[in-house]
Length: 121
Image (cartoon, rainbow, N blue to C red; front, side, top):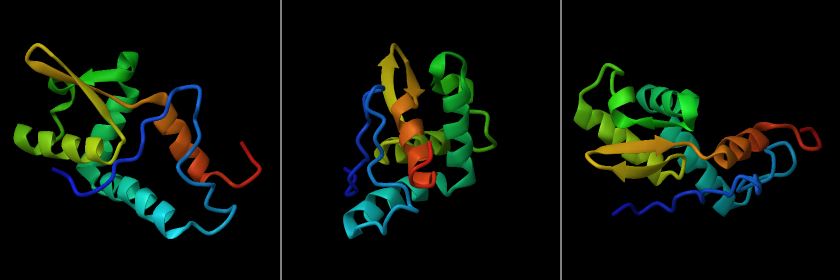
């Protein structure tokens, strides 16, 4: 059971980041903790590649069978996908024997808003 608190997956119409843009004001300790979990999850090249594969996959979701060719073993792929899911960056759904992953549009919007300059869209 993870000891970290995942970022909330947001509804598509409520793309509000967990924190204000970094240029708006300093982050609180809690905001910095949640944001660091997200960046830490993306800080591994394999996880970043998996996240990109899911985010860019046709239909906005990808079966693990479609994205597992990233140069590591299948158990390692599963480990990295779990890390992304624990950080709140991916959601998943089991369909039969396969698991499908998706990046919610609001997660991408929230990540982008975090990195934009305050007052700019």
